[in-house]
Length: 414
Image (tube, rainbow, N blue to C red; front, side, top):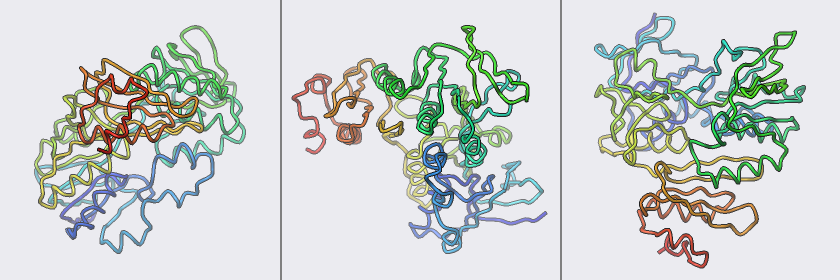
């Protein structure tokens, strides 16, 4: 057992952790930093995993966020294969698996989230059942793609739809099953879902909406062979992808008594300065639960991880910087790029503006007459316009958006 110490200890080695450390160094803050990553890899990009990396068009080394010598040059102690098993708040240290102890002055939890599993008692642990989250998941999945013919994707959110798109492009027959009434039911309106549905159907994906999965069944060799639906239908499957939402990796926080969200997906409760219920402990990225627009939520996105980390870096450096973002996201499916800005929670009016090309356009969300979010489907000009309007808090009416002759872009640039 060894005992070390650092001014700042970061549990996690993903996008949020890396951005925090980098932001502090760019600001000239040279406090000692130890970054603890549970995976055997340095910090890497996650969005390409289910796209370019899975398809084999991106080499592993291109995923690294920084080269190895960057950590040395910036005096950041990166520990991979480092699993934290305890946070001792009273004595301000963390304990690693194996018994090593690291004392901290400040602690940041940036442990991210994990996929919600399909129940093992219903076949979720069968060989051939996969999730898509980390590099190891893709490394396990990729070799199987050479021999599979039939894939079933469980879940009609972004992860499920992106997986269906890449697997279809790789030549597999794909069926997607969504238990809710429609795809994207929790994150987008019907107009956006209709366009995404039409895209997948045009590419040959077999969609089952409003249908639950009761069981995954093995074949004679023990490998998954079929997906049983609650309609009585059985879908043959050489491989199953599960994309049914995420859970915050907040176990360490809960075990040491930090306040955590009571929502289904969990998360560490933080204020606008990313402070937890312990003034020496902060949380950022997917694992952080905070208030935005009157809602308590977690945001699972690269944008949130980076922007929240930059805000915390300023706070740690002595300039309190409340985190109040205009969230933005994206999803690549086939040749369509879906870009989203704002939060559509509670929207009571949606308006569609056609794009310049067939199959493109934007959906504008309003709440009590106030513009709150936009979905842009292969319509980057509309996306940038909507994002600028949200960032400026500009007053734009639903009537203006509904008028195809109205130059909304001029409002954004005024």
